[in-house]
Length: 87
Image (cartoon, rainbow, N blue to C red; front, side, top):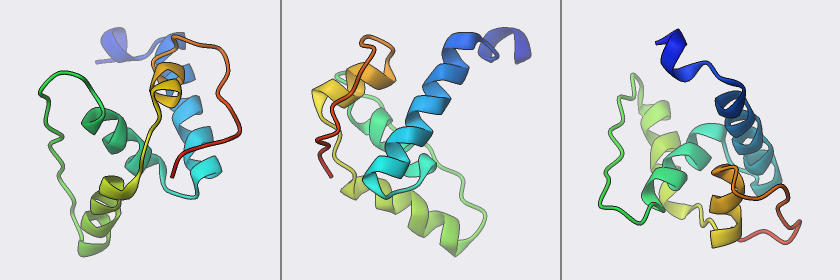
């Protein structure tokens, strides 16, 4: 797992998702799930909440809108994201 996922690029994605969550007033988990739901392929987010609170947090991702610019930024395809964010 470490060999596959622990890379500078993935840590940068994590940092950006955390920054975007703070800017949007949501959680990191919600940004991560929203990113999955904004993929052009037919992908499905599998969640495994251990508590009702975690389930509520995950469901909050359905209300997080990501612009194409934000998705590109999270994908490391651009170096900046506008301060004007979609909610």
